[in-house]
Image 1: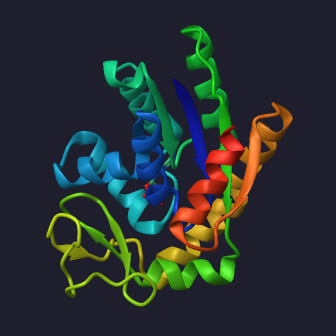
Image 2: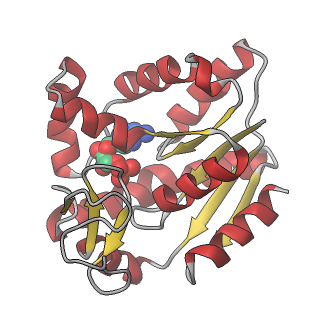
Amino acid sequence: MKSLILIGPPGAGKGTQSKVLCEKYGIVQIATGDILRANVKENTALGIEAKGYMDKGQLVPDKLVVDMVVGRLGQDDCKQGFILDGFPRNVGQAEALEGVLNDCNRKIDAAIGIVVESKDLVDRLTGRRVCRGCGASFHVSYNPPKAEGVCDLCSGELYQRDDDTSSTIESRLEVYERETRPVIDFYIEKGLYSPVEGVGTMETITKEIVKAIG
Ligand code: AMP
């Protein structure tokens, strides 16, 4: 059983790596961005409230996101372990997570940072295309699908996320520096943090992450 956190700026590859690691360890991915986008699509009360923040590249308020994650962690499939992808995004969320896990005698085993320079992120994000069906991620230049607009894995339709546009990307990167970078110090102090270089092939990066998890 492993309880892991992947930390990294938008476009670092957290989603892609989470999917591979979930397969490897038999654990579930909890991607807060994906859960929020599903809520927006279904027009739930949470989705309606979250959309305005997401469109501007800002963080959705902690109360909403923390309740959402606590609800998800309480589900049976998380008992064997999980990877948090995109959460915690600030120190308040990290503290809330610690409190919830302490209450049920659980703990985080490792917080892995995927390190990518900012100049590479804009390029990765503007060219990113995501599958509506399975969530797989492609890039128009660096990892193009075999047929344009079609997912190699499930033949689903590829689309560009609303927030993968230049103006929103800038704000998401700023929010990362200001709010999320301090989360790294939070886990360094707890002796749980390991950085991994997020540049190279997907397989090499996975190997490095697995080594860091130990
Ligand atoms: P992501 O898919 O992780 O890039 O997240 C997309 C957007 O969802 C972010 O820009 C935020 O608006 C929102 N979001 C995702 N995770 C969180 C979180 N842990 N706290 C607050 N907002 C979040």
